[in-house]
Amino acid sequence: MKNFSFKRMMMFSRLLLNNACGYSIPKAAGVIAAVILFCILLPVLTEDGGIREMMDTSENLLQVLLIIPLPWLFSAAIGTARPVPGIMIPATLTEKYVSVFLCAAAAAAVSLCASVIIGTVSFEILRHFTYPDGVQKMQILFFRDTESLLTDIPLLFLTATALQILWAALQTRRKTGKAVIAAAVCGYLLLIFTPALLMTAGIIGQDAARISTAVVLCLLTVLNIRLGYLLMKHFEFDMGGNE
Amino acid sequence: MITLSNVSYWYEKSSAVVRNMDFNIGHGRIYGLTGRNGAGKTTLLKLLYGEIFPKTGKILADGADVSGRDAGTLGKMFFMPAEFGFGHLSTDRFIGLYSPFYASFDEQVLKDCLEAFGMSPDIPDLQKLSSGQKRKVLLGFALAARPDYLLLDEPLDGMDIPSRDIFRKMLISHMTDRQTAVISTHTVADMENLLTDVIILRPDGSVFASSISELAAKYSFAEDISAEGAVYSEPSAGGYRVIRKNISGEDSPVRMEMLFNAVTKGAVK
Image (cartoon, rainbow over all chains, first blue to last red; front, side, top):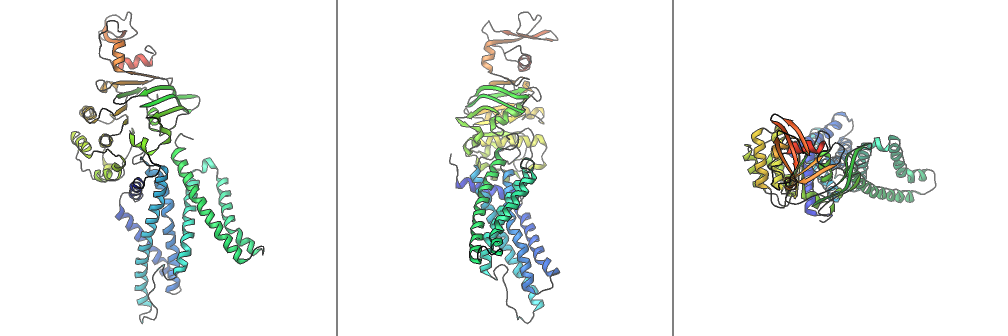
């Protein structure tokens, strides 16, 4: 039996998405749409600035919606390995882990599309009321500045993988110890900010700091992916009397 | 074949639930797994399934270590737990999502089982069923999945008397020659005519495993006014129920409850 079968991974992905949505995709779509509307309405109701500032805040809030699927599906995958408690789905760990990323990417893409459509329409309606003379041009949410979006995607991915690890680590806090987890989080953050701290201290230049930060972020992303796999293995194999 | 070699398992090291087990589970057999409450029936089924790992020893299913939980081995097995719940989904949805993982899944078998149990094949919400009905659905699914090894934990619990009869009929009519079932129960009498083998867990964690044909050839089970020369005896209304060495060579039906008592009390080794 192959360690990785694309067909089995796709079957597991379908199962995972259904399970994570409580077997009701329309209901889940409704919840996502409601969250998107909330993220759009909140700055409209609270911000004093113009439409551009409101869109900035909305985009920041909606980015959370894009990173949530990964830790959420990761937690669901561990449970979804069992269609009813006690039964294990015949799929390998690698297939399950890859399907978590595939489903998270699909969920994030759907959320992004829905955010763009709902956000752009909402802000366009608002613009008509605020600037009826049409002085300001129509702006598409998340695509006002393509360069910024492209920079944000790797950072969002890193954050999502870090949240996945954090969720898994918190589940094992009794065994690992809260102090160890807190120390690991501090070390993690220190690693990210070391290049910036070195630059502030005048030890390295701005370009070197920028490159070092990029390298650190790349390494941390790879580390998160690997650590996520090991933690999933731990949840699958080392729990429930197998410690 | 599932091979258990020197398998022990404990929740607390001082008291092993399963101790130094060595036996094989062959193809095309129906095993009755029994023991007192807390003797380790569920634990043994979970060990066979690879849900929990032996503290010592190894369990191999057709040569593969079940603890590895590779997709091939998991696809050959189906474990029906004693207690479970479905999500809020219909029968069609459940079949659509889970059956593709079992290459030989036969939907007709599931429909036959549900019809035999007097249930509609179109159930809108499986979670709303009673525990007995859930068991019937999962049993039908397990048979339809056609795994090599069916591990059923107390499948008769919550089933009414007519359903127990249907359960036996479904098992006989839908199991193929290569399939094996290990059925844990504490109402062994319900399955007397169904079993080809018996596994009895003793209170000390050791196991008694034998085929029914071997037992019938070795022992005779009868009611007698005297318990003289019996390997095991217990009082009954007409005298004694006795187990004697079979010296006549004639097979007598194996009485499971008597055998269970004899094994757990150490009279039959």
